[in-house]
Image (cartoon, rainbow, N blue to C red; front, side, top):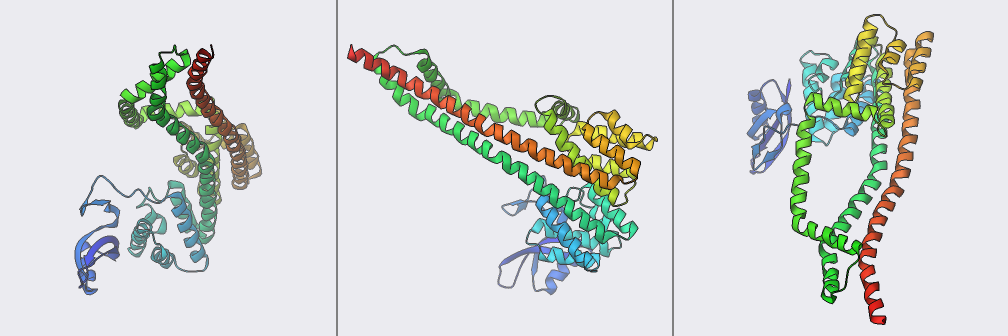
Amino acid sequence: MTAFAYRAADRAGSQKKGIIEASSPAAARALLREQALLPLSVVPANDTAPALGGLRLPGLRRRGLSARQLATVTRQISTLVGSDIPIEEAVRLVAQQSEVPAVRAVLTDVRGAILDGRSFAAALGQHPRAFPEFYRASVAAGEQSGKLASVLDHLAQFVETRQANGQKIQLALLYPALLAAVSFGMMVLLMVYVVPDIVRVFVSRGAELPFLTRALIAVSAFLQNYGLYLLIASAVAFLLFGRWSRVPANRMAVHRFFSERRPFARFSRQFNAARFAGSLATLVESAVPLVEALQAAAAVTPNLHVRAKALTIAQRVREGLSLRAAMAESGVFPSMLVAIVASGESSGRLAPALGRASGELERELDALVATLVALVEPLVLLLMGGLVLLMVLAILLPIINLNNLVGM
């Protein structure tokens, strides 16, 4: 069974959209006619794309599920499977309850693959962008061991925690970013529309202007004459940098820069180590073989340089080296994580040790983010306040000089 996205018209002529399961497009059209609907378009759900004027744009495709959607879907399926509901029925119920078309399309397609005889993990594999590699590996291990319910419950907790942590970082950095953007925008508006009118008064008096005022006039004139060109040049530079960074070698160089150079290195190391340790703990606890678990955990590590090192760790472990020694050899993970891994290997309790390490790294990351935000907010205020002060001084100094001349 395959999920198809359809657009059809009823007897009154109004159009309807939705998802329907069928073995082929022809079967989907037949099912729609049985429902007294006239099929207008029937395409596989995987190929659905935004439309413009009724035309489908082939270059734009659905990219999968967001972190929040994945966390919600995982928790719902985990709850249903834990209540002894078959996985096919659990996926159907979650898809039926979802109000997001993308989620409904993905889950309907997954259910169709299960009805065709595939395993749950194999069905998820049809949507690698929606379900990461570590997620599918955990599900496969749960199916093989007969502990799918417990694995899904653990996955739900992990995905929810990861989504909450990511959201916390975004919200923490949102205020400083908005503050800087609004302040900069107000300054540009002042320079373009307010400063020129004030400057005309000074120029008409023929007074000698201070250097600060002349600099302000020059910047204002530049923005008036070349501001639009500067904006276009910035947009072009941004697009060129985006294209340049998509080249694998260039992207690797950028990621290596962030992982090795101050002041980004510490934050990058903590963030990637927390993601790697959390994913690896989930996989090991789900009874995934260590080498496969390392490869899957590496695949969801954001930094490409750290990801390459993690894949090297998996290769070294495959060759017989201990996990602690391989991680220490890579040089990209904090010593605390390496020490906890060493104790977990010695005691034979690697999964709980990795879980503790992940929790500790997350707490340190939260403290680091809080410190950065606490520093960024006053820094932005001081910077913007300093620039505004310079603008005020540039305007007031000629006024003071004119008053002094009048007084004389």
